[in-house]
Length: 254
Image (cartoon, rainbow, N blue to C red; front, side, top):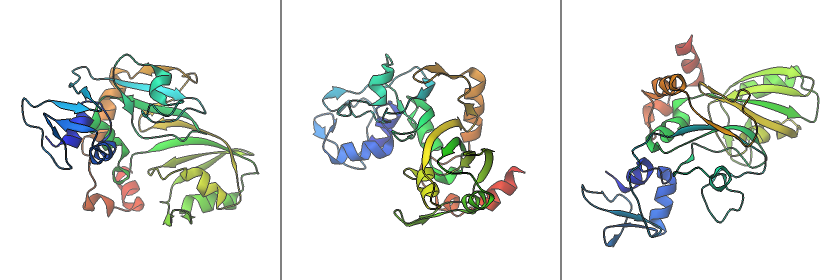
């Protein structure tokens, strides 16, 4: 098994984060410092930042209502990191991110492969948000958001998405991407400022009445459906997947 996948499957961190740690020299296989692409052979021991990595047998999947101010990182140097805040008795890490100023649903787990399948934008998995802005939500604004927005700072155009007005200053939006501060950047492109952003759904998992700062384990039914939805998902980027358009994806659903 490749070393980055080994660390991911052990619940240490995502593959991408593992690659960074390997390049920084924080990972050992046996007595040697791990290099990118190294294989972990049966019987070999792996150390991460000086600690022995052991595969966790128990499958952990929890839903957490992240409050504003908490940072979705396992980095101990961040005093408001999500791992210390939850203080879960076993090693877990977040599936994706939710920016510091936002709140709402985030999943945490020790299932590295599942995290990769959920996070890959090429899998078109939905995430739903309730957004409050500082100006009245107009039909023109909604149409512009739905069509896709060019984000100058990132030099990308977002995918077309579902947007629906919920009140004078509030709307819901369903994304299948996760650019850094994407919704805030999209709103700013039209002269709007986000005053509150709450993620209420990740695929089939809903925030519901979960109070800010609390978590719950996923139900057996939720896990079964989550695994069904990710069964044919890629855990690494695939050309075929990235070539699919939003239109084809939605036609497939209907």
